[in-house]
Image (cartoon, rainbow, N blue to C red; front, side, top):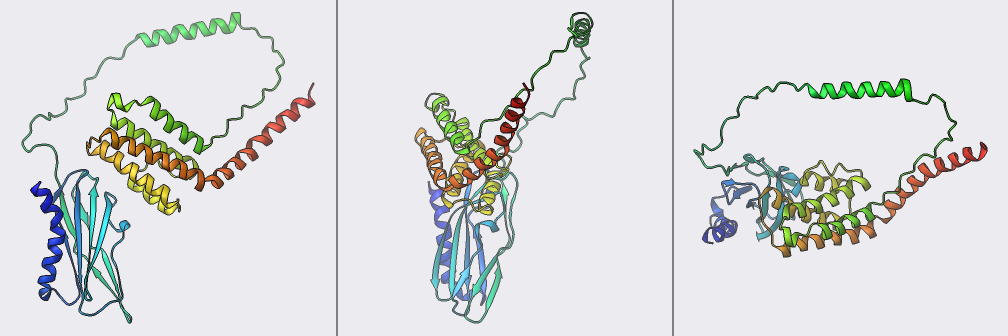
Amino acid sequence: MKKLLLNRCAPILFLALSIIFSGHIQAQSVNTQVDSDSIRIGDTFSYSLLLQLDQEYSNVQFPDTNSFPPTVEVLNRKQFKLSEFSDSLIYELQYFGNEDLQIPPLPVFVFSESDTTTLLTDPVTIFFKTIVAEGDTTLKPMKPIYQFPLPWWPWLLALIALAGFLLWWFKFRDHTKEETKPEKPSIPEFYDPIKELEKDLLRIKKDTKVEQTKDYKLFYSQIGDALRTYFEVLYKIPALESTSSELIRYLDAYGVDDTLADKTRNVLRKADLVKFAKFTPTLEDAWKTYDEAMEFLERAKLTDASRIGRLKAEYDEKYLSVSEEVESENGGTK
């Protein structure tokens, strides 16, 4: 508990000490600090910036969320204007990588009435903390691959099947050709992404039975995959093979509704914690995540109705013309 309290207070203490010793800071500078020197998958840490100037300024632009490496998720940011000549920002970040984290120098833009100044933050390295104990010898080297002899019986079965086919072909096959009418090509049913998402969410609630199985990893994975499939089909985004951070960047680039993007970010972040950080949620947390997915569904019904309408129009243009053409051909040949 003491360690957690110190970690949370470290950024605020850093800002306070920086103000006290501001006389020792350069005329124009941006100081960088993190509250941890090592991290594991799913760990959160603070990244603090203190801006010190020698003149008043009208505005300052700190690095945005896209400036950080893709293995880092920005959970929160708090800005404190300390004086007319200083400003600060504290980011709360969460790590999802499996190697040392390198945060490169990031630009900070300072705007005044007559000029714009660009300052760079210091590069930061945070070491990755492995969960394997040092000196653990339980991991053994891989054994050489043993070569098994190929079985002969599949070849015998294939030979018997071939002989039976040839016997049918030459002796029992009816060579008379019957006139057959051209079959009407099968027309696939229209795939409505909204209805399919609703079916998936109701099926998850009915079949998963998370109250009994406590299989939260499966429960969260199925909810996340349902949202990913929705974007894959309707927006043509490669959502199923993208990481959570990559998918969020796709949503920003495609101009997806802000509420849909926020709901997706919340669901995928919690799913990543359960799948990769070995986080065990409560049953109440699981159903709150499910409720967020249902809120996503209701919002999608409003914002994506026109997009689904265009998808239905393309379906009608493609398949209804084929159906009319086949019916016309069947009517002409009696």
